[in-house]
Structures are given as structure tokens and as C-alpha cells.
Amino acid sequence: MEKFNNLQGLRTLGFIFIFLNHTWGMISPTKPFGFGSRGVEIFFILSGFLIAYHYSDKNLPSSWRDSLSFMLQRLKKFYILHFITFLVMLAFFLYKFYMNGNIRYGDWQTFTFDAILNITLLQSWYAPAAFSFNGVSWFLSDILFLYFLIPKTVQFFKDRKYSEHVVLFVFLIAIKLVLDTWGNKMVHTPDFFTWYLNPTYRFLDFLIGYSSCLALYKADFKASPKVVSAVQIASIVIYLCACYFFKRYWLSAHYILLTLILIYACTLKNGILDYLLGNPLAVHMGNISFELYLIHNVVIGIAGYHISKHVGPVNIPQQVYRLSEKAVPPFRGKCTAYPPRCTAHSLGYDVKII
Image (cartoon, rainbow, N blue to C red):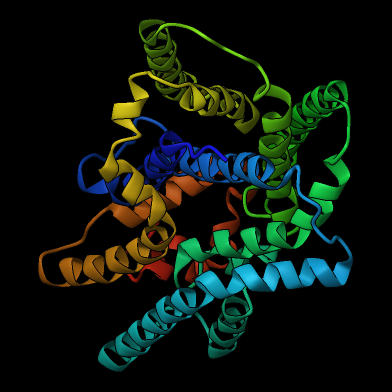
């Protein structure tokens, strides 16, 4: 089966977006666009696309027992690193408590409850705890749920006609648009829920990526290297321009459509992306992007704490917090109900959020 190095390079781009989301405050108080949201979208959509590419023609056992086994097999690949980063952040919080006499996390019951949710990878099901400890690990909580449903997903889409795949793809996009529009207007959602983090909602992103592979990959685009390069450059430019100019107006569903175009452009051969995203460095970073994703937040959090302690306050946490409000409208204002669990505190910064 053909390997798309460009798609691994696209994973690198997704990680760079997320990294910039957590560090841009060092450069400027405002971001050009929501780096984090766009990076997360790339991860989920690309995961669905690649799962369809590798598994759609396979006979995966799809009983619930088999689904659980499939999930646990993949859990082994990242749980050790997740647990290590959890222990590092746990030690860091206890160190702060020892040094300052105040854990700055709220009460110990909350601390223990969030720790249990992190260890069991259930934190994204309960929004107040989602960004606790290693704040980015909520993604693992979501991806674990997706792994559990992959055998069922493969079975559902298998042996369907191409026209059915196209209809399902359009249907899923329509559902995404409806939920995004409705969700952005649903200000009074329960405190434990937010669209941005919820695994069932992110499963929809995964399904869109999966169905897009089945519906779009068969589109046979043959052209000269110059034309392919022009298409690839146009897809990147349009994507970045849309992120910048429509950041206040577009919903996630709109960006996902452009993300799908970008993914498709990456599958085209003999274009400029073979050099921009398919080079050995970009591919290698894409191969370890999962590990980089888990580690970077811990490093930034601990380093930021010591910088703010010895040099002065840094404004990264405030930017991360404000971004979370913009990216998750139903979440807006709810952080004030449980500030010790907010992103900045989970990162370990000593800062007051206003």
C-alpha cells in the first residue's frame, strides 16, 4: 500500500499549530488565528482519513469485545508516556504546594477527582477536568473513544457503493454545520459538557475524515508537476488566508472543508509538497508528533513557571485561556466557576486570569 509522506508532514504542521497556540504569548498578546483549534482539526480529520485508507478494505472483527481489544492494543502504544507526563505534572503540583504552601488548584477532593479522570483517560467526558494536569491529554481521552469505535466504523462503511459514500460524506458535513451553528448558540450547556472536547462530537470529525477518503480519494487527478504544485500551493494559501480573515466568522465545519482539500492536495504526486511536507525532517517529526504533542505542554508549563518566578510574569496562560473561550463558545464564562481547573493553572503558571 502506498505511503503518503506528505500526510506525515501535515501531521507536523498540525503539531506546529498547537505548539504555537501554547507559546505565541511570548511573541504577541494576540494570535493571527486559532492555531490550536486548527491543529486539533487536522489531527482528527487526518486520523479518520488514514484509518479509512488502511482499514476500509479489511475484515476487522467488529463485536464489542473485539472493539475493546482493538482499543486496548492501541492504548498500549501511548499510555506509558501519558502516565509519565501525568506523574511529572503531579510531582510539579506537589512541589508547588511544598514551596508555596498553596497548591493553587482548589480543594484536595477536586485535585484527586481530576487525577483519577486523567489516569483513566476519562477527563474529556467532564469538561471542568479536561485541561487538568497535562492539559493536552484530553485529546487522548477522545482518541481512545475513537479507537473503540473503529471496528464498528469499518464494518458500517464496508461494501457500500461509491454513491453511498458520497451521500454519507455530504450528510456528515451537513450534520457538522448544524451542530456547530446550534452549539455556538447554546450558551447554557451543562457545566460538565463542551462541544470542543466531547469525544462523541470529535467522533464526527473522525467520521468526516474517514468518509472523505472513501468519497474523494477515488477522484483521479492527473496533471503535470507544475499544475500539481500550483494546486497544492493554492490549497495552502487559501487555507491560511481563510484562517486569518474569517477567524471571527467561520465555524469549525468551514475549516474542516478546507482541511479536507489540503489533505487531498497532499496525496497528489510530484508536487511541491513532496519537498515542503514530504522531506525527511517533516516526515520524522510527523512520525513522532504524538510524542511531541504529549511532552511539549509539560515542558512549556514547568519552564513557564520558573521563568515567571525568576524573571517575571509571562502572558502565555492568559492567551491560552482567552483562546479556549473563543474556540469553545459554550465554554465561555464557565471557567470562572472553577478557575483552579483552567488551562493556565494546569500549565503551572503563577498568574491571575481576568
